[in-house]
Amino acid sequence: MKSAFIKIVCICCCTIGLAQNDSAYFYFDNTTPIALLESKFKNSKKSTDAKFYKLIYHSRLRDSDSMSFYINQLEQDKNLTKFQQCRVLYFEGFYNKITSNDSLFFKKSYQTLQLAKKAQDTLTTLSSLAALSQTYDYNNDNYYNLEYLNILEQKAKEYNHVTYKIIHRFLLATYYYYRDENNEALRNYKMLLGYNYKKRDSAYLLYTYNNLGALFEDNLLQSDSAIYYFNKKLDFFKKSPSHTSKESYFNTYFNIGVSYERLNKLDEAEKFYLKADSVSTRENILKNSKKINENLSDLFAKQKNYQSAYNSLKLSLELSDSLNTKEHHEAIANIKEQYDNEKLRADNLESEAKRKQNQNLLIVSLFLLVFGGFSAFLIQKNTKRKQLLAEQEQEIQTQKLATVLKEQELTSIDAMIEGQEKERQRIANDLHDDLGGLMATVKLHFNVLKENKSEDLFEKTNTLLDEAYQKIRSIAHAKNSGVIAKQGLLKAVKEMANKISALNKTQIEVVDHGLENRLENSLELSIFRIIQELTTNIIKHAQATQATISLTNHEDSLNIMIEDNGVGFDTKIISKKGMGIHSIDKRVEHLDGKMTIESEINQGTTIIIDLPI
Image 1 (cartoon, helix red, strand yellow):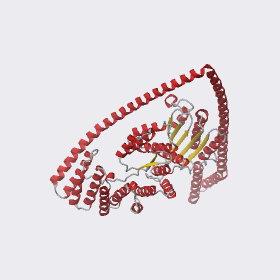
Image 2 (cartoon, rainbow, N blue to C red):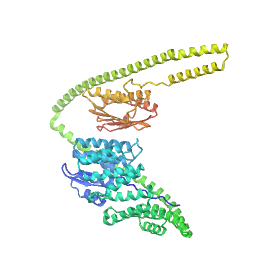
Image 3 (cartoon, rainbow, N blue to C red):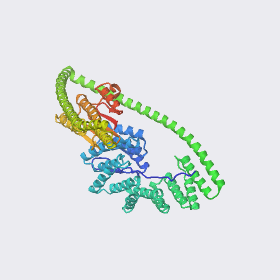
Image 4 (cartoon, rainbow, N blue to C red):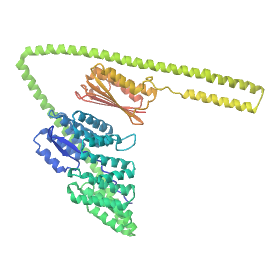
C-alpha cells in the first residue's frame, strides 16, 4: 500500500522582537538556531532578559508547560517595560495557539494589538497582526483570516518593514492554497521569489520553494515543476546549513521520489526513496521507515519485482506494529513526565511563596516596633474612616446602577409589551377583515351548493377553502421583529454599557463580530438578561474600573466574553454558588450552552459563554 504524498505547508511563525531596553531590540525569527537561544539565556546578566530568552527557546520547541511557567514568571516581574508587557501578552496568545485554544488565541492576540498601539510598539503591532492573520476564519472556513491579512499589508507598507511585507505575502499565498484557489496561490508564491532576501528573512524563501513544490504536485498535478522546486529547496539546504534538519532532507527526498513515481520514472523514484531511507531521523525513524517501505513495495510491484515488493510490504507491517508499541510507551512516559514537572513546579512555587511570606512578616514586625502603638492607632482610625467612605460610595454607586439597570429592564419590557399588543391587534384585524369575509363567502357557496349541486361551484368553493387555509398559515407563521422591541440585542447591550459608563465609575466597552443579523426573539431576551446580571456583578463585587463585553457570532454558535480588571476571586471557593452565578449558569444550561469562569485574586475576571444559535 502506497503512502500519500507528504503535504507540508509551513505555517509562518511570526518574527518576534524582544526588547533588551526601551530603545534597543534583539530580533528573533523561527530560523534562529536553538544553540544561540541557549547561549543567550545562559549568558544574560539580567534576570528578566534570561526569562524572555527561555520563553522564546521553549516556544521554538513548542513546550507548552515550560512556556506557561515562564509566562507566569514574567507576569509577576516588577521590572518589565511597557514593550516587554506587550510581548508577554503576545506569547500568551502563541501558547493558546499551540494548545489549540483558538478562541483565547484570538483574544490574547487582539489584546496584544491594542496594547502595542497604545505603547507605539511597531514591531509587536506587526507581530500581533500576523498572529491574528493566522486565527481561524469561521465565515470562510479557512485557517487564515483575510481581514487581518489586509490590515497587516497596510501596516507593513506604512512602517516600510520588509520582513513583514514578506510575511504578509507568504501568509496570503498560503491562504489561497488552503482555499484551493491555485492560480492566486501560485501568483503570490512566485512574487515571493522576486524579493531581495536578507539572512534573517531567507527562511521564507525556503518555505516558498517547499510550498510551490507541494502546490504543483498536490493541486496542479505537474510533477516536473514540483521536482524543480524541491531541488531548489535542496540547493538552499547546501547554501544555508543552519536551516537544515534531517527531517527536512527526508521529506524533500521522499516527495521527489513520489513525483518521479507519478511520472513513471521508477528508477529515479527508487533512488530518491533510498536516499530518504538513508537519512537517520532521531524522532520519527520508525514512522519514516514504514512510509518508505510502503512506497517501495508499490514501486517494486510496478517493476514486476514481486519478491522485493513482498519483502518491503512485510517490513512495513512489522514497523507498523513496532510503531504502535513505541507510541504507547511514549504516551505513558509523557504523562509521567508532565506529572513530575507539574509537581516540581508546584513545590517550587510553594517554597517561593513561603519565603516571601516570611520576609513580609519580618518587615511588618519591624515597622510596628518602630512606630509603636500610637502609629497603629492613627492608621486604624484612618483606615476605618476610609473604609466607611468607600462603603458609602460603593453603596451609592450600587444604587445608581440598580436604578439604571431597572430602567433599562422596564423600558425593554414596555417596548416588548407594546410590540406584542400591536402584533395581536394586527392579527385580530386580519382575522376579522380578511379571513372573516372570506369564510362568509365560503359559507354562502356551501348553502348554494346544497341546493344546486354544480361541479363548477364545487371547484370555486374548494379554491376559496385553499385560500382561507393559506391565510391562516401565513398568520400563524408571522414573526415579531425581535424581543427587546425595536432595539435588538446588540443595541440594548450598548445602551446599557453607555448608561453605566456615564456614571464614571466603571467604563464598559462593547466589542462585536458578525452580529449584523438579529437572533430569535426569546434567545435575544435571555442573552440580554444574562449579560445584565453579569454586569451587575462587576459593579457590585469586582471594584473594576474597566470592563469589556465581547459578542462573536460563529454562524452556528454565539461566543460571549465578559472581562474586567477588578479584584477577582478564588473560583475554587466561590465556584458557581455566589454572586448570582448559580442562576446565570442555570440560564446558560437551559439554552444548551456552556459557561467558563477564569479569575485570580487581583488579576480580574473573564467569563466565557458559548451558546448554540
